[in-house]
Picture (cartoon, rainbow, N blue to C red):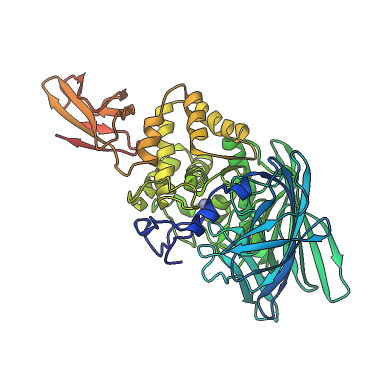
Length: 543
Ligand SMILES: [Zn+2]
């Protein structure tokens, strides 16, 4: 934990600053973060995860069936499972296989000859006492919380850390199964809520029952979750862009009345985000909001919620403008990830800004949708106080290492700035919707997002991405009045930075100027003050 910052969907509460992040990497980091030779040859198609948690001793046991297609025939397959969990056996076609453990990676030797294009399956049986989540969702694992009534509430969270903290899987984000079944066996007094739709509940003759949840869309591995509690629930149909979306809510019995009021915001969220980003990406799996003992996480189609039925972030406004208290941060932010994180998913943790910058930005767009454009702008500008500019937003590739937590507020402000450069709100909205359509259910790299935005804005904005994602300096517009003109240029920028910016001379009209790192001149009518439009995340200085 001290060696490596674990990622987190939610911000603030930093234990360590980004600057303390790991800069040297180990063999284990590469096994976790690279598309290794033992991963690349097979394409994941399906998981069936079966788990029985045992609250008495905080252990779990179960298996994962992994179906895959052979892309290139190889005989050794990598499956990940983190210590202290143990693999008990691995089976293919009824045969027990041998394997070698290298830390959290298992290299399993397949006896059956693997043939290109064939679909194959292995089943990995495992058990043990998984890492306890001490402060979820930031340091993930499995959380066991007695409810004072003889029950134990169980939840999982594992972003960054990886889903192999609680189940055997291909623990790399580049490859997702096309579908998945999650089967969780719990005492009869308890309900499990996982991803997708509840296909069946099977009553067992040992005082337990098994919840079978079917996910029919690709799912990223940290999005998979298990939530066990004596839930009460209700369901609705949301009439959305793609028709009827089943929406369900699962809460603790004592919170039912509060939840019925607070969770109406999920409907408002769907309305606003379908407007900005296009249809909710998982109609077939439904949308669920599920109460948990920790703050929350963007678990796909079962967004988890622990914001205490407060507005803002645990009752606080991150923007300090007042707008952040108009809505429940966890409902809005975590659900925003259904579009950016679950629909469009990074291939490598270094590109985590694709999840967090757009989702942070979604808070601004939600505010705008309900309270107007200036309110949205106030909100995103208000969050600038939280930007550190310590290290670049893009992290280190192939070692499961995300970049600066500036991926939240600075990333949101970068997108808000790019919107100003595009200077056409409808075009910008179509770009946001187009991203979700073009990269629907895909894992992507930063370059694909940059290329798409470049192509669809009709303007090369690579230097803007470079400046804000790959550098820590904030552009400064230097200007100097001389007679009936003003000279201006960018400083504190990368080479070739050429972002247009909107300025106002004295109390005249807003106008675009096109600075570069060389001085340029603008004729004036004798004005002696210049202000830069506050929507651009830049600074300015008279010299
Ligand atoms: Zn997030």
